[in-house]
Image 1 (cartoon, helix red, strand yellow):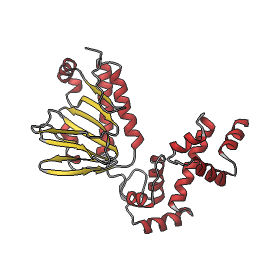
Image 2: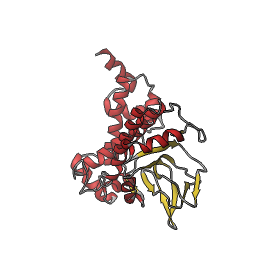
Image 3: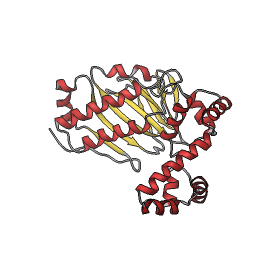
Image 4: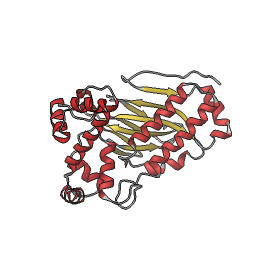
Length: 294
């Protein structure tokens, strides 16, 4: 088989890989791939003016996973808004269109796929499904597929990428209800649910409303329950998690203090240092020096 990828560039920082036609034709005939196989995949960051319209549909199923910003898709005459941490799958041979929001364009991972079992993964996603956990896992799996295929299109790479894709789809299909109180792999404890979400979004500036929506409570009820269980307000607890993550970076990387603050979603390095000092009794620099002496 051919071992060279077809890569194109459009959005700054994008990734795009299409399995060459001759390779694809051989692959779909192989019994190893009959159930599920990848046609192409990509990542479009900050995809301003992204727009696609297919009046007769596409030969493959299309999964689009929005990780930031927002956009929309239109299917069977219905236009659906898509926001951060939502995904949808467009069935094959179905007229559709989709695009980024003009003022807040989405960043998306997308995969075209097919196979005898492909339709099994499309029906749950005709409407967007809010899934804000396992974010790092899903992105890591996408990168694993991409890096494997970029190395070449031999049978071993193709099959490994396909198996990885099955796992990727499984995180959407089988864990789509994990953010509800009565069905999640982390138990029904509100603290477990909320702190997992905090850790998954440690680089963001979460508000009380964000946390309460995820835990399926009103802001006031969530605040009261979380405070009773932990002794901390939700936002104060979240900031403490950021401090603990900062400690790890200080002792295990060479990142500067302002870089660590930015990684943790804190734009004001002075505020970060002040809060860190209040929490740990040492400035970030002092903490790093003390750790290096041990």
